[in-house]
Length: 143
Image 1 (cartoon, rainbow, N blue to C red):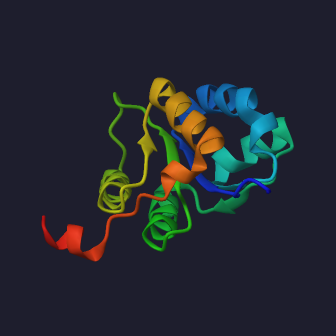
Image 2: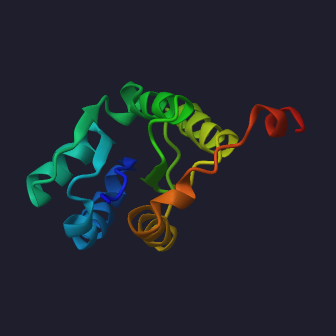
């Protein structure tokens, strides 16, 4: 039986793109056949250096985080790696917060640093069945 394919969301702030590239490169052999959706410059970097196919969305300041959030809300993206610069405030910070909120609301793993990204990628690539723990409407109403 073939392993289920998953869709991962990938975003990295400019100061974190090198870390993202190192991380994805180390998992590239396992990511073949899975679906990757990324903000524009992050996705272009991954494509160029790994050869992995990446669906590109807008850059972060142009709504890319919101686009990925839409994929999370619709059940398409099953895990997100968002390497963000915690020391630099971004003009599109509300979009970042919205993405984090939608990941929490839909119980989607969200990694915001390299350590948690390695954990999330390991789980997503080796135990994808654990990503299908979507909260029910009833559990959402209990909040």
